[in-house]
Image 1 (spheres, rainbow, N blue to C red):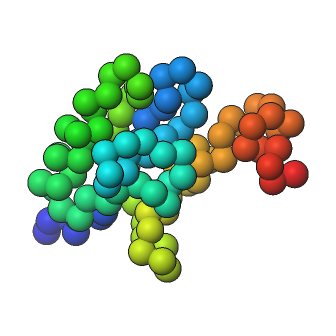
Image 2 (spheres, rainbow, N blue to C red):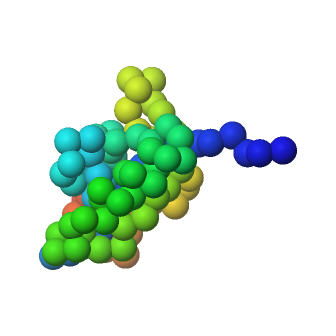
Length: 102
């Protein structure tokens, strides 16, 4: 039996700052996962990855990840790895996004 397609989003890391970024429907990158464009079928996912990969001087390690959809219809992490990535580096709790939640 074929697996039901799960919505996907494109993610990577900012080339200069290393922050996790998400490709948006407007063709730019955002640090907010809720701004991520969602692909709802495999053809759209292939197209999304191709468009997101067109920024080699801005973003590295671009790939697709499964996405959940929150109650506002926005992208949300579907896997615990992506939840961790939205929080930024965890080895220095006094720096970056980790400090915002303290």
